[in-house]
Length: 440
Image (cartoon, rainbow, N blue to C red; front, side, top):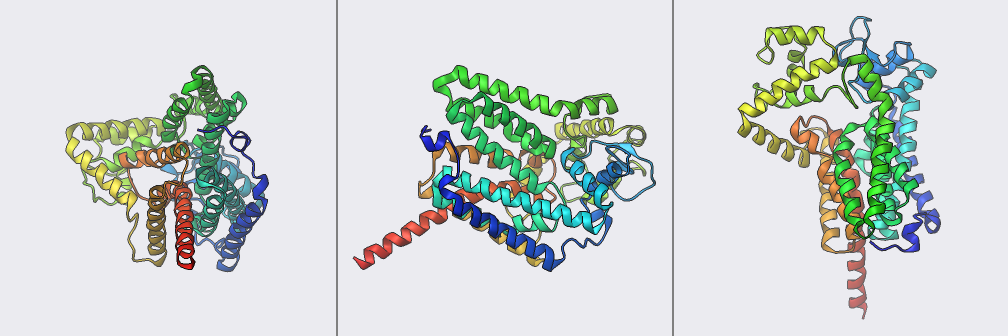
């Protein structure tokens, strides 16, 4: 990778107009959707962040990071249990809004959606910089403009209270910092990268799947100064651990064992790998795993353990059963992983609803444009390789567990906007060249 002055000091001095334009577009589109669509008028309390809303309400009411029911699901009696079902950052933010505006209030909904809109505007700036590093200034602006209007980006900013958009902002920040560290070998930048890694894991632990690949990429890029690169990697890892430690220590005190981010991985693993079959209804499977009624998924002893244990011990029960299934049925496990892979990369849900159809067409379009960008060879190979490592690694947890919600693919879609912008940039130049030949 080159070490030009531009890359050593990755600022947007020459692109202020592009930044203002991208941010203005993103803000205008999202505020219009929120206000004219009245997307802040949620039909039920469950729509206020789902499980995150349950935890946020408990925080606002002084019950700590807890839930009133098993896995923060349906409304139940006011008996609160400590939880780590969700990572702490977004429920903490939502809990603050609930405390200020009232739990499940319209004011809290408006505030949450406006914060997500502001974070989406920040994503435009981050994507502009990533596109710039990947394929030049024009591609950077195109990437930011694509995000401003991209259907999934608008949807998750304005119609869902969830950590989706903040998670993407942290992921984009992480990529830019990793690139910066690879160029400068700055220890201060490495420490900041570790901070962002820790925060990203505490926002959405799926990001952790990318971390080993990011560090290996750094090692490969820094071969010429191996000692400095290894020191930077050590600083990144150490800082990440420091940022995540308070939450892990809290969980150890509450559950009696280490839970670094979330307590539900065993549950998700068993949801996707059990004897009910690949087409089993996930809602019914979740109900069965509560252990309230006899089920082939749990022995009577396991049902009693699930009902009486905390989340961490429940997760161990589920993980043990899932691993037993995988050992007994390896071919079925591989087949389900392949099915989940296909579902993730094609149609996440059916095309019967207009919104799902538009989202699917938009996603397939950016995949095609990203391929055009790769064909045009207009991109920085080191930056492209890092983006592709993130695209390839982020879905890995879903291939192993379940592919249930549209939001699972959203971070990957955002990352693909940068090479898609390079593809559009390439097509613009091809068209201009053809016009020049015709006029000549």
